[in-house]
Amino acid sequence: MDQDFLIQDIQRAERKKEVSKVLHRRKQKPLWREYLETAIIALVAAAFLRIFVVSAYRVSSGSMDDTLLEGDYIFVNKLAYQYGGSPKQGDIIVFKYPNNPEKEFIKRIVALPNQTVQIADKVLYVDEQVAQIPVYSKHVDKRIIPGDLSFRDNFGPYKVPPGKYFVIGDNRDDSRDSRFWGPVPRENIKGKAVLIYWSWRPDPEAPKWEFPYVINAVQWLGYGLFNFPSRVCWDRLGTPL
Image (tube, rainbow, N blue to C red; front, side, top):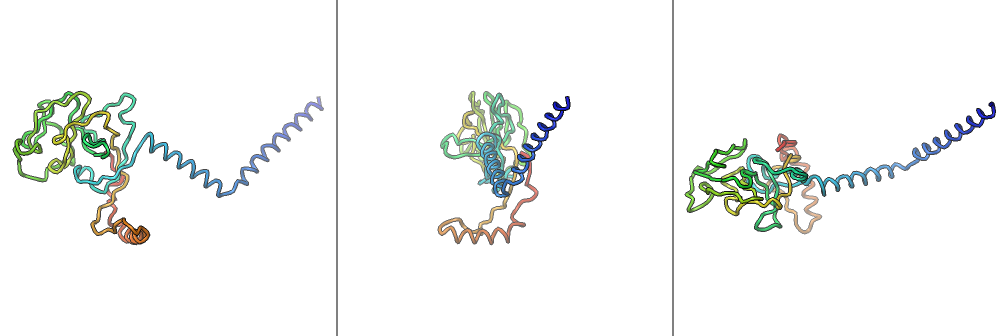
């Protein structure tokens, strides 16, 4: 019996030694290796999110003022309409421009497949009911343009075909959208805009990014350090859409 206890004690001691060796090896891992492993994991996670879950976009026009401003950077959920989800009225979407799939636009869905759209003197109707007005949408031109001259203020009635979505910019007097080039096919929709994560007020006096790039890099560094506090739209950061 004493011999059995002795063997067990020896085995426990050996296991403790093995654990101690493993812990010692872990403690001896170089600091640079830990940083490298962390960086690799972060890059892989970011790449996975970028490819399968979210994309980042910069707003480069004023067609969605004042909901989205030029210089806003947004996250787009690429999975919003996967696995049974469908686009809804009021969603802000990024999509491939139907007339040139190489270009990507951002607009708001105002009508779904098989709904009827009509605009009369700037008032939007969907299925003969006045459509809900987005909080920051606007008209900047008091003129009413007749429908035989432009579809901007008078349009339709028009029934949206199956599998397509009617989109309009929130800056309704200064947006080229479904009124002019038709509805967006479902397969062209890339995702739903969900968040403004950064916003930088454009500056026509900012340095240009052109050859020779080294000089531009130095100019941008100085410009950014000097203008950073005033050009960032702090109140827009983190705004949900």
